[in-house]
Length: 206
Image (cartoon, rainbow, N blue to C red):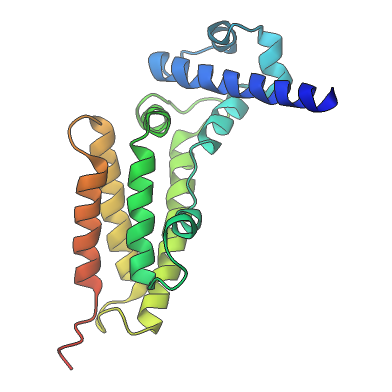
């Protein structure tokens, strides 16, 4: 019985997060009340406060459902013997696929275009936090690539990381302005493949 109660509580929490996604996307975060979210979920405001301290807590929990630590993307898709550059390529491809899924797309559009700074919610700080996590992971892989003699000798891993991060960030924000304009997976794969080729050491140059 206790297990069932725990499962029901988790189902209620997920339903509230689903409702928050819908209402935040439709109305914007600042214009959305917890009462509206509860009503959209067919629940009371008390149910919201049982699971979340406030709107900021609910918003962060919604973001956590679509977080994609780069190391986890690589672990999920790259074979254990993949080179660091191949790991980056495969991790990015999986990330593009995930971002094109409705939930990921909706939440990131909300964060970037439908969320203003107020109270305990700072969307720019949240974006920066996720970007920093990605930057740190990319630097690890590109440093390994340098150590294995895979990077061009005149390319510092930190510079390569900033170049790749700038490409990914620009691509991401271009796509979020109109997610129907192009395939994130197709364009992203093309850009990342091209950039990694430019990073690679030319083994024929001696």
